[in-house]
Amino acid sequence: MTDNAAPGAPQLSVRGIDVFYGASQILFGVDLMVERGTTVALLGRNGAGKSTTFKAIAGVVPPRSGTVSMNGQDITGLAPYRIARRGIGYVPEDRQIFPEHSVEDNLTIAAKPGLDGQVHWTLERIWKVFPALQSMRTRMGGRLSGGEQQMLTIARALMGNPDVVLLDEPSEGLAPIIVTQIAKLIGELRAEGVTILLAEQNMHFCIAVASSVAIIDKGQIVYRGTVAELKQNQEITKRYLAV
Image (cartoon, rainbow, N blue to C red; front, top):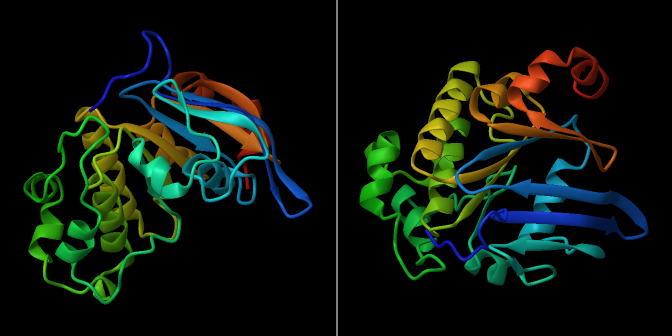
């Protein structure tokens, strides 16, 4: 994976972004930093601004102000495909697989070299990390379960050889046993050196996989800390995360 960032600089940096949908402001000066090889969780209730933050980073909803930088280079406002080429892999909340294509076709469609020109993720490596997908390689995407589709979407993002993977609500709507499998997978990806920014409202899921957390509420970052610090701060969890 490429390493063009200056020493000590975050791999992904989001500074002061404001995002609007029409006349309605959704994000207010959001700041995030993700260091290489870490898993950072963006926690918040439904509607707090998590998905909008990810869409802003990925270029789907460009920020009206503020900056998004990748490896020290400003990518704010670039077209989504250009941001993907700069090393961002985006796993959207609604998965968006190709239902009439096979598992293998879904993966090969997304294949591209990384920013450094190298191919770190190949089909062979995907089959090793996602053995369940290999056994279903000829199955149509639309015939997969929700958990299988989630694994396919993550694998598809990796086929683009990204430097940073954005995972938007990967546990949402899945059975507890599948959530456990997704958590194990994220842990394996972290061990492989993949940098992950994870959006979730499931605090217990995040505690199991993340190294640090940021909490967003009403479009603003209201807390930052390590997972250990959050576990000790019941006032913050009750105020911003309790249902």
